[in-house]
Image (cartoon, rainbow, N blue to C red):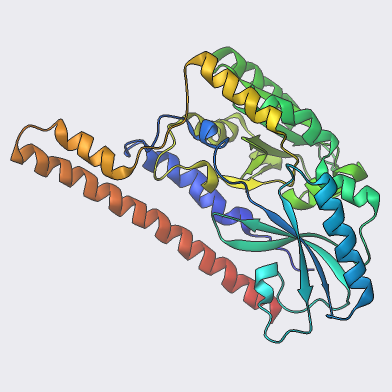
Length: 348
C-alpha cells in the first residue's frame, strides 16, 4: 500500500516558518493556537472497503464496519466508505493510492488532512478487520494516557524509545524540558511513553510513521489529539527543537498561525466530557477563544489613526500582511507540488 510518507514535510515548512511570520500579524482571535485546537473540525479519516459492486465479502465487511461505527464510533473521527472498484476512472489519489489495490476485497484506513487536502494510507487489512483491530481504532495505551492531560497542559509529548544501540538518551531531554516548562510556562507539558512494540499501538505507530525498529522518536500532541509535524527523530530531539514546536502553541492564533496548519488529528475517540472540562477551565481562568474577522481588525486599527497620512501608514501595514499570507500559501503549494511530483516518480 502506498503511504504519503512526505505528509509531515509540508507541515514542517509551515511549523518552522510560520512563527516568525505570525509575530508581525495582528491576531484573528483572542485565544492561543493551543486554545484554538479545541475548536472547529477535526480531520476525519475513512475506513474504506474496496471491492466490486457485487462482491459479497466486501459488502458484508462494509455492513459490519458501518454497524460497528454506528454503535461504538461516537466521538471517533472515522467514517465508513464503500468503494466500488468496478467504477471507471476512480481517482485513486483520493485514497492515497497510485492505482487500484493489487488484491480485492481490501479494507483501507485512509487518512485525510483538512488543511493539506491530501489523503494517505494509514493501514490496511486484506480481510475484515478483527475486533482487536477495531478496538485499536478507538484508543491505544499511549493515547488513553495522554487524552485527559491534553485539556490540562499545553501539550503531551509522546516518546517512543529507539531500538538501536545507544538510544534512550532522548528521555532525559524530554523530562528536563517538561520540568522547565512546568516551572516557567504553566500549565506545562507532560511526557507519555509510547511502546512501539505493543501491538495495541499499531494504528498510532502507522499514523505517526513509527517503525518497529528505529531511533528515538518524539511527537507533540495537542488539542483534541492533533499530532504536530514534524515529529522529532534521533539527534533532532533537542530542547531547542522541542521548544520551537511548543512555542508555536503559545502564540495568539493568527491568520498565518493556525492550529489546523500545525498537524494532523490522530484517530481517537474524543468524549464531550473533555470539551466540557476544557470550557470549564477556560471560564474559570477568564479566557476564551473568539473569532474576529480580518475586516473588523482593519476597521479597528484604522479607527485608531486620526488622519489621512496615518491611514496610509495603516494600509501600508496591512498590505504586507496580505503579501506574507500569499507567500505562506505559495510555499505550501510549492511543497505539495514537490511531494506529488516525488510520488509520481516513485510510481513510475
